[in-house]
Image 1 (spheres, rainbow over the protein chains, first blue to last red):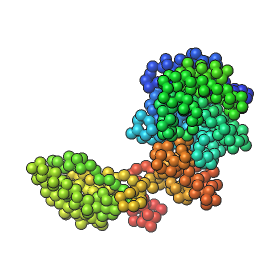
Image 2: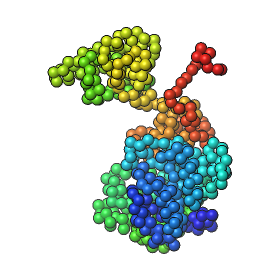
Image 3: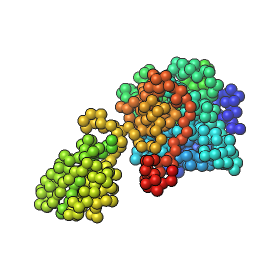
Image 4: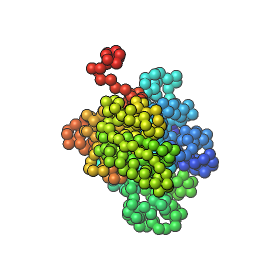
Length: 294
Length: 226
């Protein structure tokens, strides 16, 4: 069983740090936080062509992280693969010892750096969870038997600040039925909204990892200009405090704010763990952990 | 109906550059309604070509004709004798019409005058939007009359993605999220149970192209076993 799963099952607070697979094969920067923080982090998240921008294959990157001695949560999106590719990549991941999965639809191709690429979405994220569950049960998506079943710990995304929320909750329930065992949110800054969301899903016994993000100068400028368009809100006081400052200052102060948020999430038991998005930088992740006293 | 857009003039001019005598064939149904390839657009293209080539001291003889539907044998057959006198043909029909015209009538090179874009509706004059991807497995009965395959850019069958912002789509902020709309309509109709069950993956084997449909009443005629 994965350490990440054991941590959640034991009711302990999981800390996941997101890495940035490179655009290329120079993996030293990606692996730097693994070497520095393995002892303080439960697992490392490895995105799959995040924001529809082409990067080193997440499965390969995940194996490199594992070889460096850490546990991984591998993301797999429906955007770039049909059902054959999804299934064989899932088996491939299992054969490389990758157990924790975050199965998501994936940002649309026109939002990324290959806007003319053909979007696939042969399966959606609910169906992908079913596929992974089926593989664990010993068969592929057409019912053919497997030679050796994989074992996965299945994760999915849920959006606490979705507007409207009701269709999102309906999908959340479908994901539970399809086999999701833990959920990861987009970045959260507003704990009141998160708290209200937790009340809405209180009937379900699920493990929830809340993403905490260090915003960069570009994102801060968007928020300050009123052109922010994300599935999460940023508090105006954070924007007025940081917008227009030196980009490095924004990151360092943002990491400090993120650390305080993580501490609060843990103290108020609003999450079963956190998913830290800090540009894959060791110094920012270290600052968050220090301030959060983790 | 099928919506098309006329190709850029420079592209059409370059395609027919080697020829001295061409025929432009319009189509009087879908592409006429969407102002891309009907009789008026045939005339406009002919005038544009004559004017542009005249400025370059070149001569191009252009014939013009528009048939009711280029996708229909009945309307194409009478055209075949007429096309023989020309070195090349520009068809202003959708892609189906272009291919059928070439198959039935033309030994000459044929060139499309429009880009076929989608199956859609005529909202107002000059304003057309997509509604159907001809997916072979219509979901509209369970999704409140909103197509998740077409109206959701990702074609998701089990609810919204994580990109819905204030009920709008992550891909196009001007467009309402298809799944917000589906949910809202079914809620109003008291039919939300329709979408609580997980829909399976789409049967893409039915969509293998090129598709063929034979009406059940005509199966014997075409030698298809019942």
